[in-house]
Image 1 (cartoon, rainbow, N blue to C red):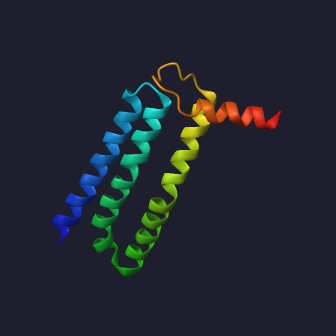
Image 2: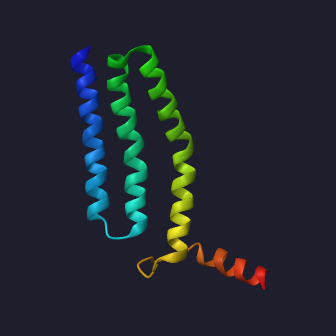
Amino acid sequence: MTVVAELMMALGAGAAVLAGVGVIRFTTPSARIQCAGKASPVALLLASLGAGPLLGAAGSAYLAVAAAAMIVTLPAVTALLLRAVHRTADQSHLAVDDLAADRLAARESSE
């Protein structure tokens, strides 16, 4: 059981390292946020699955609450962060800007 737990924690650490490498290598803020937003829950879940049996029932419960909170809140946080970046950063690299119409409509309705 210990070998499996250590393997799961190592896989979780590997996923976290890959997310960090992706954040460093990608050039656009949107790609960086997507990379961190997709890999970090996987890393947490793998590490939690590995650490849970080693920590006992109480530790596993804390890890389950943390993992559930991350899985529930991360999609909304990532979407809001991406929208904020889209509004403030240069978007000249996009072939099609689907949010430009929303931004234009919001400006017209506020006037």
